[in-house]
Every structure is written in C-alpha cells, then in structure tokens.
Image (cartoon, rainbow, N blue to C red; front, side, top):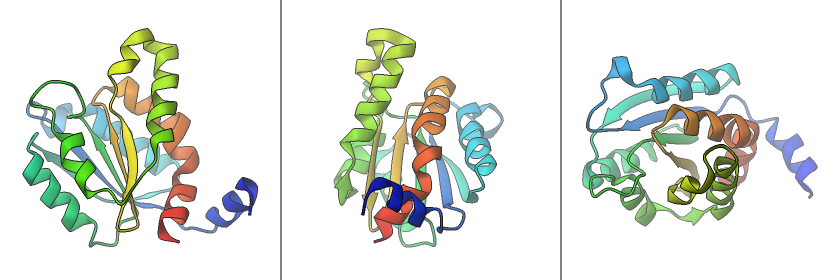
Length: 168
C-alpha cells in the first residue's frame, strides 16, 4: 500500500480527538497565544478538542499527565513549550522515556523548514513526534511562529494519517 492509498484510508478517520498541553512557568491562560493557535488550527481542520491544560515545567508531573491521557479516548497530544535548552525546559526529558516509537522525520523536517525562516538558530530545536500506546504525541517549541509552521506544514496535513498509522 503506497502513501496515496494510506491517505485515502486515513481520510476515513473521523475528526482527530486531541489534547493541547502548554508547558510553561510564566504563561497564564490569557497570554497562552501558542496554545490558542494550536486549538484554532486543529479546530479549523475539523478536529475535536478533548481538553487543554497549562502545566509547569516539571518532568514528573508532566509524565503523569501524559500517562493518564494515554488511557483516555484521545488520538493526539500536542504540547507547546519546555523544549528549549535551559535547565528548566523538561518537556523532551519527560516525554522521551514514555515513547514506544519515534518519528525522527518530524523533527528533521521541522528543523529544515525552520532553517528557511530563522537560519542557523533552527539547530536548537528539539521538536519531536512519536507514539505512546497508539496515541500520537507531538512536542513543539513555545513560540507562535514555530507552532504555526509545525501545524500548517506538518501536523494538520498529516494528522489523520498519523493517527490512522498509530492505531494500526
């Protein structure tokens, strides 16, 4: 089965049920622009939001939330923030040990697309995508530009396909 056949099958998937997590020590709901952008772009694409949360940069707490969400009727978990290089950024460290499968191509493509916009600073991105118990999990930087790029160029076009593949 080729990619065109896969896309045809994936189109049969209903709206993707997603959860948005914003990982931050400083933002509140009213200034979580990246989180709202995720919701807006996924909702516009016809997907269904199950929940949204703002969580602290706490590896253990984040890991517990993700484990719990992976037991729910959720297809996709999209996180923004906590992916930087500072000591406080813990999203990647929290998520990586939980992953059953990784999709290195997501981070590679994201960095390549980012390079076209921000130049060599793209090398600092730790964006990732993988699966946990058949759920697609995506970790994105906290900037609105990064979220817009990842969703419009990668995630929205492939969301149903990713979910269909992960559930097989």
